[in-house]
Length: 202
Image (tube, rainbow, N blue to C red; front, side, top):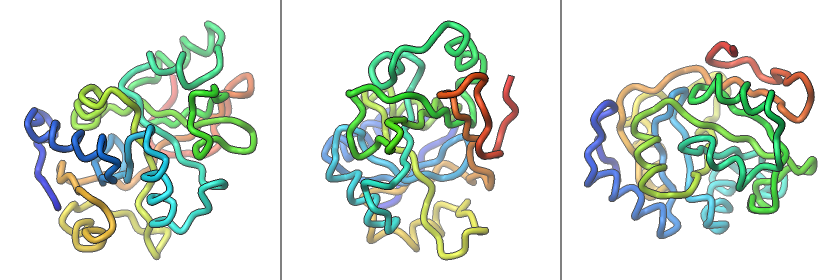
């Protein structure tokens, strides 16, 4: 199923439709401030495993990050961070960045790496933000699988043609971007960029 949601003025009824699917353990494909992503409610491990199956990943080795509506989720899903790091995050969020932080025990085991870290994003995208606010939980954020690693899906209709039988809902929120997020390791001091992507850090 595919639905159109306005990128600037998302329809509340459609947002509720999306969150209803997420709450029932469904998988969605959605626009972000970088590229179109695939995700589910962080509280549904069976849905996380489905995503790993679609991407042909070992759930124990998959490095999946998740989207938060704001920094308030940090205290739940990350170990305590110092004031300078908090300021650094606040200066750069929301934005097209994935920050690697030390995971707390609240993070599902499937999302933790061997280093016990987790990737967190706070996207600057109205559709994402409204979904996250309505849902009340973070959602998984992972890129779409494609046969050509140099290719990025930017058109929701094309995405629907490829993934309609693998996911529960696809959101058409306009043309997607080509560049993934910049990944920053915040478990070291100072933080280090480990993947160059969209955006410039402050």
